Length: 233
Image (cartoon, rainbow, N blue to C red):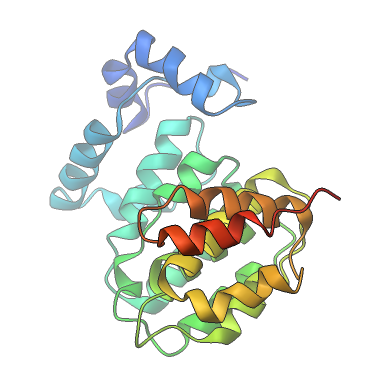
């Protein structure tokens, strides 16, 4: 089915498209349908999001699902992130996450309403972690990483939640490795048993170590010990 470029803001996005950046972006997100990508850079999307908020065109756009273009999905994620009310944000995420089909849009979403860590947010994150949808699970892991690895919000139970996310999907496993590597940098003693006791999937285990030893936040002695924990089988 042909895409309708007459609708707002797709017509503006089409005008912003850069063929060279489009080719670059398609290399970054393998498997994406090229017909869905216009080649608009993120700073331009942020500017358009700010304009839509000022002109009060954001709310109608957020009700228009599904979208035709990747850039519309990215714009949706940016607008959703600007919402201030927790309940409104969660409802918008529940409507949008089933349509997220790539890591770039998934990782762009950073809800402003979550910055105060509402008490009901951990339970909601747990529900996302239990989702059958790949990018909903990745999003849940990203929220644990972003909002619950620093005091006073960190809780060792969150490590268990992340450990229980089923392994085997590359984009979920990669986010899990980022989460555990960051946890080692911030909560080393609490996180280390996951590796010493072999509680992670082998791929996630080894990728976590790889990312951790690349970090500047771990000491040379910590990195040397982590290298001894690499698993061959």
